[in-house]
Image 1 (tube, rainbow, N blue to C red):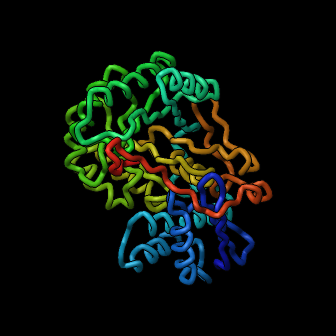
Image 2: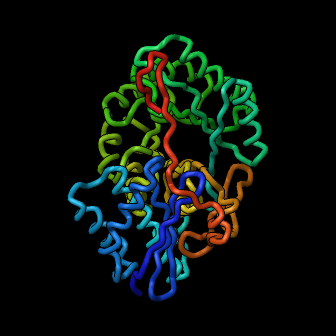
Image 3: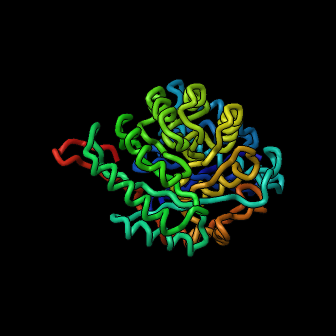
Length: 371
């Protein structure tokens, strides 16, 4: 079996779907995407194709090493997102070829169902609470919210109190049996993050995600030591090398590698194994499409230190059989490969040019803020 061709399709609202063809008639899906840079990742995938064409798709680790190491300038969001989507598609091909789910090829499942959470928005405490209750009615028992607006290096008490009020409203609305993750989105300085953590501790968040930007691991470790809230990070880290120092400094107790950015299924399984040595959990980042979710679920099924899975899309309008959330969980998929079948006729109606851009936040003085 040899790789013969690939297709790339930009799909609303901001996704990029990959389909790899083989001469054996087996095809594989992947999601090589970087939010706001979809066309750059598309170009990177196409640059890898001359190497992939004619190769045996089942030599997944060999191809990963070739794409990663022969790039010379290793890692980074564009190259790793391209490699990640290709790797997902190769696992899908191998699983379909062997008529096995990917998790069976990685040691078999360690659980029967996978705990999930979904994001909520809201401009006021009341709106946040109502959105949280709506998610509960949809079957979720885990939520995540980003209550902080653009925040200065040292900001007023209002910046913290306004965010805390939103979290308080959600906790009071859903009770103590629901997990609530707090995403700071890297908008806080270490000083503001410590103030925020203290204000949020009474509401027992599941985690405090990206309380500061992840580049300065020592700063994040300081925040971790200052609070009882578990620190989570990882969506902007790539490969096991990007996570090494986070674990060594115990800067986070929950790692959030994104299977469409960090290197794909096997690379994230190896990141999870590293985390297990440090008694850290894995909560894969996935505000993306249903192919990325399908890849994540394969990892979740076979990973002992898995905690909870983020949901971006269950696949309604994209998959022949969308995923279903029941009592806060998704059943471990049973189908071969990634366990999904794309509704390609429906996908054709959702194609767009791939020009989605990240939001742009501005401080009150006109300076650039972190989104």
